[in-house]
Length: 140
Image (cartoon, rainbow, N blue to C red; front, side, top):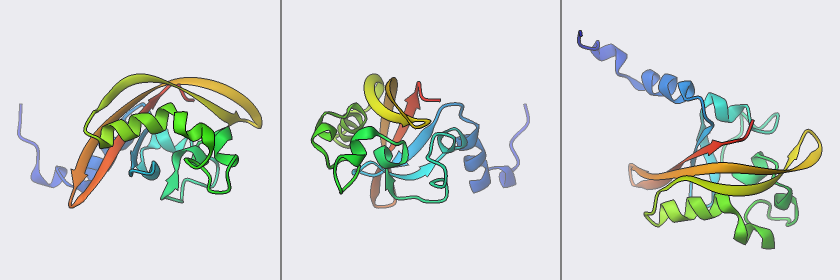
């Protein structure tokens, strides 16, 4: 097996690998703002949101509870029991989460839908900042 050309190992490769992942993957901050996403994640975002970043996951994924408070995702009473938010918070506390079940109530094609999904969260640092890699299974 030959060596990889050094030019191949650049930032472009990381983007290609990120987008090649078949599951939706998001990079989020401690308030579950979506900072980056892969191609599979882009397909889940509300139309028009693909070009916007730094938006909370529930707002972008159309969680029904995100509309219950003027502050949006993370600000309603139901948000304190959000499995996705709990998983991200656990990862920020240094407790990675792997394929944990989480129930969400989402707006799907204009209709409320209860969705059970598996959530995986892995914390990582880049520069002086901390982030979580959020992987969702069961949304399509």
